[in-house]
Image (tube, rainbow, N blue to C red; front, side):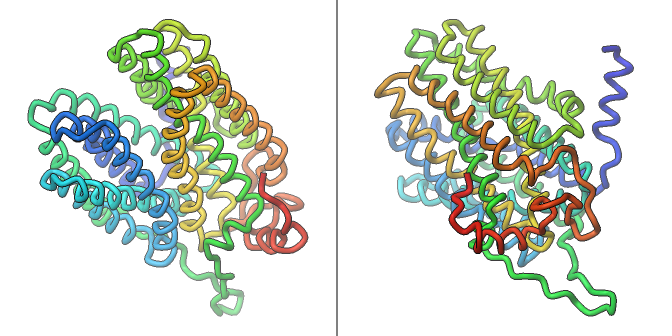
Length: 442
């Protein structure tokens, strides 16, 4: 591929999106560029404050536990308050938590602050995803999610490098910088990002249309969406397992921690370097095909970890499941936006966010227990099996709802697909509570 064709592909990838999206993209980049807390929290707790590794692991788990509560909270606030107020409030809450960590020292205070930070950081995600779905045309939504995910990883890469170089300033200084960056993110959203929550619809006579009320329970009764959430949970479990199991596996083979640092850095390098190319290659492809393919890449990449015996081989496995990650994350977010009614996009994104938070809490505990018990090979065999199961689930359970290609949508966000795929989310929910009431979703 020539330089000119690469430039042309890059321009096509970033062109045609509304200005508001790019302000949101910039806020994501700024926020993640200063994301030092989670990166250095375990080192701060053990090296600086002298707490045990067990306590450090518990505190990090509390962050994930806070996310389980924060995601549905953020979804409800997104639909009720609006996108921008929720984003600004939760960014400021996260900034206050980061600043507090620079000053509190007691174990209980640190645990409480990290728990609240988990709530705030996860609560902001539904509003971001709903805003993208609101402002970007349906045929460009997956591309927009991919670009925002690229900004997230680009910012995280900068934070990792900058944080490592600036560690001599002290952990507390890094936490203050995190707070400043998150506050700046909130300022960008407040000053430049318009509110995108859809206005109440009206009928031909100009009278307001009464929308069906959508609660969290209603969302969970939407059988196709419930399938999407549970399948995403399976993929998230596979995706999260290497972050705990990989360093333990490499250490079990006598490889140094520095080798693991190099291997896991491949994940960020591949995303930053090739996300736009992957997005170009997968653009306009069937969402079911992409979700199934990404699940198989996760299965193959993590499963092959059991066969690796050198840093190069481990890095190769990371590349495989990283490609799966680059395909899966934006496609899953776009599928969530596609299945959600306009007036309940926040709640749908909030429920989907819970699957990520639950996996972030469960997978580290499970991976550690399996590696310490039956052994690493059992862990990687399990992740491979779960990945294959998820791929089969996407193909069999969602092939009709997420029909091949991006269906045309009317101005209310409903698709023009046939059969169940043409039903609105509320119609699907009504079916789920009737004839489909016995369905378990997967």
